[in-house]
Image 1: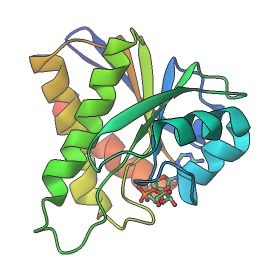
Image 2: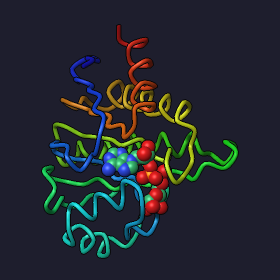
Image 3: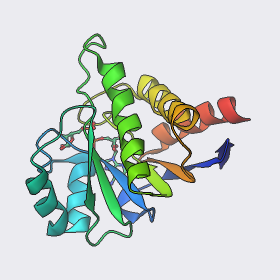
Image 4: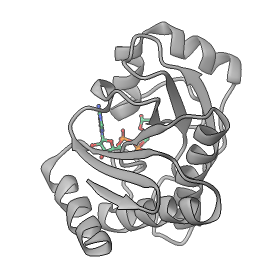
Length: 176
Ligand code: AR6
């Protein structure tokens, strides 16, 4: 557990669909109509209520975020954001990934969510290198807290050991 200003930052290894937070973030695609990875897991565990709302929303540009309720998930809301597909790093990927984190937190704040859980956006099917992506994830939340507002709790949820250790090492360096 880490603390930055008034925000508690936690790390959790495992499945984000099991996390009980006011909001969990989904690494979606521009259609918002579901897919593989964490997106598939969230829709499967949350049930059809989420997809119905996503259809009504009608898509989301890369770097932006949209919100639905969470169906059968233990959370209250799902914030769907779309990270960039990593090409060679020179197609505005860093800026778009930053925007995905930042805009997810803005939406969380608009809905007065106190706790928000993030998966590692773009580092699966969209192949963003985890070392670069984790820097952006951490910097983006710090910037949000500095510039915008505080969130009581932010949880980074990492699916595997390797990603978890990368985050743990970086957070230890920054906050300890
Ligand atoms: N809980 C937490 N993290 C998970 C889970 C889970 N249940 N499942 C996978 N991850 P990805 P992307 C991790 O591919 O790269 C979809 O088809 C995974 O190990 O889910 O942003 C969408 O519809 C990785 O570290 O998302 C888009 O088309 C991280 O979540 C596309 O994939 C992100 O991997 C988005 O690709």
